[in-house]
Each structure stands twice: as C-alpha cells, then as structure tokens.
Image 1 (cartoon, rainbow, N blue to C red):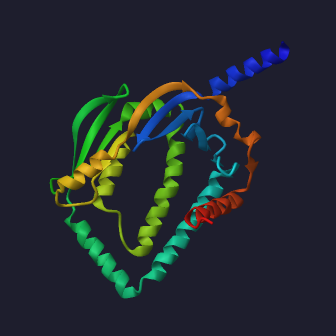
Image 2 (spheres, helix red, strand yellow):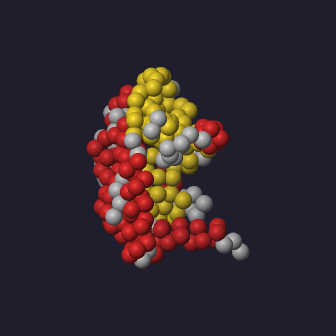
Image 3 (cartoon, helix red, strand yellow):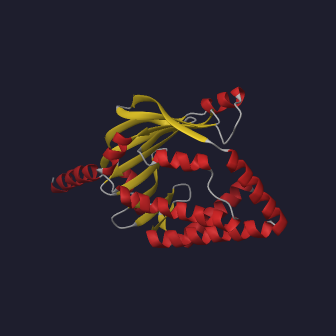
Length: 274
C-alpha cells in the first residue's frame, strides 16, 4: 500500500514537473512537439524525446532511440564543438576556391545583394490556435519572397516558462558562427534575411512560406512552395507522459564525442548499406 502511494505521488510530481506549453508543429505530414517548462526546452518526435535543453544547468541532452544511446553536454562544450565544426567548414570552402574564383563569387554575390530592395508590411492579423498572430509579407521589387506569421502573445507565454535571454544565448552560437563564415568568405548577410530576422524578433514563428530570394514571380513555383505545409497545428497546456523522460534507465550514456562518432557511423551506414 505504501509503495503504491509513493508511486502515485511520484507520478503526480513528474506530471506537474513536465506540464507546460506544448506546441505541435506539422511539416509535410510529420508531427513534432516542442515543450517549454521550468527553464527547459524539449523536442519530441514520434512521441520520443530527441533533445532537451536545460537552461538552468546550461546543458543539452541528445537521444538516439534507434541506437539506444544518449549524451549530455554543457553549453560551453557544445559551443566549442560548433565553433570547431564551423572553422573546419570555412577551411574546406577556402581551399576549394582559388583567389580569382573567390573574387568573382564575392562580386557576383554583391551584385545580387545590391539589386535587393526589401519591403515589409503586416498584411493581416488573425488567431492561430487561440493566439493573436501577425502575417508579415516580405517583398523584393514588389515580388513575394517570404510570408511569416508571428505571435508576440505566444512568445510572451513561452517566456513565463523559459528565460528568453537563455534561448537567445543558444541562438547566438549559431549566428556568431554564421557571421564568422561569411566574414571569412568576404560576403555579408543578404538584405531579405536581415529584414526577416528583425521581424522574427517580434515573437514566436507560427508559420513560414519561403519562396526564395527572387525578383520575378513564378506562379508554378509559388504553388509548389505553398503546398509544402509547415505550421503550428496545436498549442496546449499539456502534461507529458513521464515515460518519455526515462531514456536514461534504458539507454547507454556516451560522452559527446563518442555520441557524434556513433551518429557519423549511422549516417554512413544509411548512405552505404550492406
């Protein structure tokens, strides 16, 4: 009786711990979930936890259910890994170009960027899953390049669960590496991306339709892009099944480098099956 009562209390506590904002996203028939709660951000795919950021501990956990392995890495070690990977990519790119080819690539890129004249405006205000959302249009020479649906109110709700500054710190790792990459190649961020990222700072991205960087309309291309669904399909205050977070009792823990090696071998096996 005591054991049953202890188990019941444990289940209640775990459910309370992992209750939070759950955002369900549908992309071309594939459903993923994002969970925000108690300074943690979890990604769930096919009802399996695949990654977990603990912003209080500044740690990232990655889980591979096929290989039955997981790893936990500190934010600083993850940042160092991403920096090394980025530097290796930069060196590969530079070695693949001779000086003349690199100069021509830079000039051609600059010529394209100089022709870009971004126009942004709010085309509509609507509710998506109960949250007020603004539909932004980003045009170049009056031709649609992107549509983005942004919800400041959902971002405000997420901020009650997870410190936005903590998430921005992770985002900064990727943006800093992008800047280093572009600087090394002597190019800059295109004006459309700059305009889009300014809009993204206004709230949570509910939906996006990216037609590509262009100056001329293409109705057939537009139709293909618009048929590719990537949008929020549900938002709830949902209690996650505690079993999702018991991977450590069933899987082998690896250090981060060993986990990455296992991922590389898995990818190679998928590309070159026996």
